[in-house]
Image 1 (tube, rainbow, N blue to C red):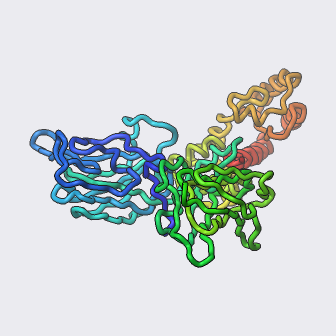
Image 2 (cartoon, helix red, strand yellow):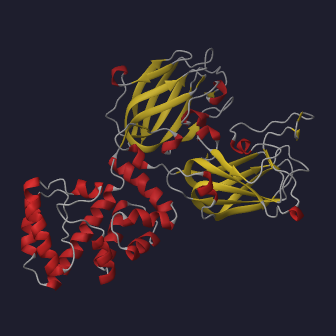
Image 3 (cartoon, rainbow, N blue to C red):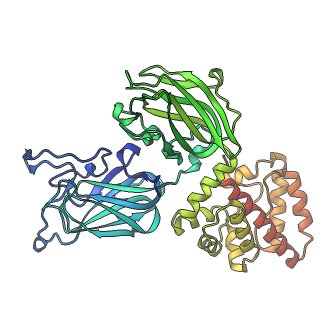
Length: 480
């Protein structure tokens, strides 16, 4: 794969959260975006200054047995396909071998929690001095953190963690999204020129600190124009386009044009528009941006040449694209993480384990079909566990229940409470009904009707209702 992103780079928010030792050179250097540098015979109070991470010499007989290690928080969680362990300028003080492990942790965690997390091996390699070691993952893994272990000690200049971004679409709800950003899964598909700097810089989530952090082409002498082809992280409507020429003073392009490229051909998203040097330009409907187009690939044309710092394509992803991105992440995360997501939809632990084991599903419809089939086949113990996860109708206990039971009005609550008691006395479990889209009066009428069922008939109705509720909750996981 040629369009992999360095998920650990400081440029995308990566950081080193802990290390076993950093006596000679700081751990934070591992994820510096720039290539390592070296000035010979430059000494500090601990010796030669190195642009990398370097540990002391181990003396196992003094109680310091084991490998040295550093734990990196990825700036962009994703599927890791390859790593680069670069020992540039470390020669004679480099480790003899390295291994890289991964883990997936949801939310913000303390360094101690991350260090103690369950780790899975990604890859390993012997090391040479002053060499960039490009190592494929033994099995590509989804990760939020990686751990570099070196044997037994020494220095490493850079760690590059190359992979595919897995955006968390829950963060897209209620806000505009930069559909082109690396953080959303955007990527550069092709470009006319990479002479001075790579076009991937345009999609970095943070602002450029200087001109070298943007994209700049060579000077054209042929009357043509330069371009970069960007694949969006999710298809959607672009409401604002930002072309930022900050730091580009004498080498900004003269004009920009945006073209939506799709299976049905090309459509102009923004007509050719003048650019100014060292300026953040915003283009919306008033400037001619076509927000009605559904876009998943954009060609940025700059005339005649030059450079700019950042491209932002702010908009709303489609429901289908959001669900696809959410399911892709669900299909990739470790089983325990997927099971936790599923338990929020149906509280039967055996069901959640079985559905998680069936990944990847590829489409929301395939996930819902498999989940529904397993709900309808639940044994009595699993069904009881699932029902225990549902609150009484009229008395929701969490935000999901409150949202689903929004149709229950106060005048219905007393009658529903009485009906719930009668139902539980008759059948021995909570009254379960799909509440979403139903009023309290409707659910009360259904309750009274179901009180006339025999146990076998009601058991079938309960499973069908549970399957319907579970399917709705699964689809709501990644609803914009």
